[in-house]
Length: 80
Image (cartoon, rainbow, N blue to C red; front, side, top):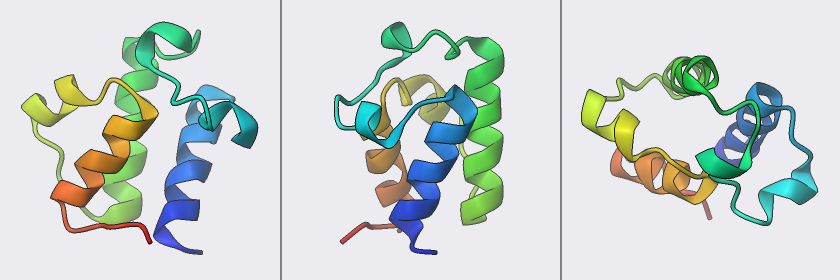
């Protein structure tokens, strides 16, 4: 599975979203399941899947689907 597909799958799974919903760049304020527990679950899934360690500052910056893509890019994971 490609890194981008992995990211999308994690995001959809953690927040019970469809692939179509990702096109609207869902943000914390838009996603019902994106509460503190959902946020920690997203972080844990990303760290496990991409073998990275996300800092506290990065955690607080991860407020949307697109910000997650930027965060992974900062860790050397770039989507084509």
